[in-house]
Amino acid sequence: MPPSTASLSRPTSLLIGQVAAATGIPVKTIRFYADLGLIPTLTRTEGGFRVFAPEVVPRLGFIRRAQSLGMSLEEIGQILTIRDQGSPPCDAIHQMLEEKVQEIEDRIGELRLLQAHLKQLLQDWQDPETLGEGQICPNLDP
Image 1: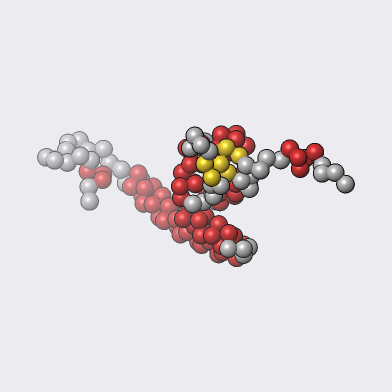
Image 2: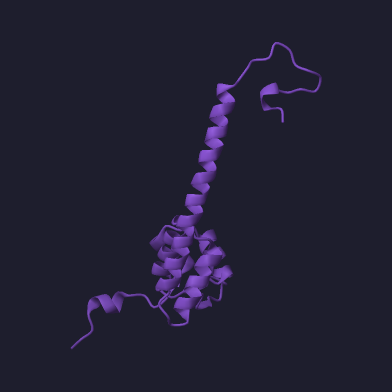
């Protein structure tokens, strides 16, 4: 049986501009991710351009999605290392996401306290008729 036309037209390598066009990620960002080791570079052309395997396209999609969920590039690197070692990183991702939820809940609590403090400050606000020497706004004095 002859190979399908789809398999014949699938590139075996991509230049960085092709990766950028396929992902919508700027070339500079792709270089940065490659320098961090988040995406592997196959080789370089004689002109010094990076050459990538087509598999970097979904990998870059994963990196972007993980970032949108609040994961740092360091955390993403840990996940990708697990995957590159042949293991599914889903357990690690689950744990990281649980930690993110807890961080968000803690931050929401801090923000609610700040909101209450600001509301009280505004409720007690008094416009001073005069300022003491060196005073900026008595309502914010310690």
